[in-house]
Length: 369
Ligand code: GAL
Image 1 (cartoon, rainbow, N blue to C red):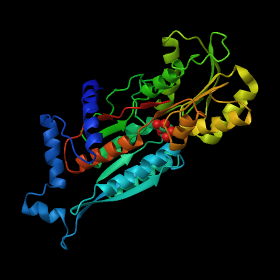
Image 2 (image 1 turned 30 degrees about the horizontal axis):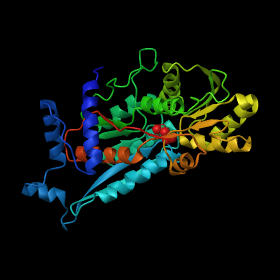
Image 3 (image 1 turned 30 degrees about the vertical axis):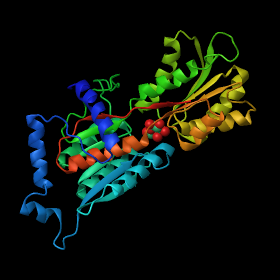
Image 4 (image 1 turned 45 degrees about the vertical axis):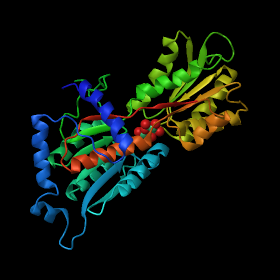
């Protein structure tokens, strides 16, 4: 598989310009191949400057051209992805013009791969002009990508990065593994290593560096998201790595999967606090949804964030930003759903216009403490 490190680096610049200009399109350097693809796609979605094109752009009654957009979200019942999908919908509305409209269909994958596969098949049958896909299972990416590519529909993957696997089915610990090796397929996301590192950095910046009881080590509870998800894997690994890289000794008391879910976060934190009591110094949650649950458990256990325990999340949901401001949460990391959704939509529109797209678009996380 071809590596795309260089193109990913180039994309960083593109993302900055896409996010900055909102709706503007930025033109990646196009190779001969890209140009060929653009020409093919232009035949399907012509530019405005010929009489024939104009006829296809608008219907007989002179109405605007409407593009059909299919969006499948892994699960509607997810705090962060709800913000993300609402922003996709409203941003598509906001960039409509007199001549270009978007008919956006958003469906719930219900955290079930069979359901989502069916939805993608339906999108193909319905002749969607572009598909935006938040995978239920990244390990099923190859098969779905192949189907969409075979149907000639551009595909924008979001939030759950498809990974490459070795012959034994283990994930390759490598982010830019080039499995999206196709001119009409891309991934828009954020590098979860950065969010994990920021969580660790927030702890390092505390006066006691997380060692509340002064016993020379940071004793922590880790509450993980969906273990198949690279965001969960990297946040778990890199939050702790930031501490150990800085020479801080750590002790893991509990590491359990909460699947991004508030109720599960509460359950895990409650049982960790009752089992380990004052030994628990830091609770790392892979997302804010679970941190909200952990916060309820902390309160129920009569503990106080900032005094006898620290609490970290990721996403920067509004309620968690307020909690950080009033001290009931130690810190979180902004997972920028606005920049990510706008980038995904901008890239989808570029693809609809037959413009060349790159394979990876990255949006930065921001530390909130
Ligand atoms: C993460 C986010 C989680 C959850 C997950 C779904 O990036 O932090 O809250 O939404 O995506 O894949």
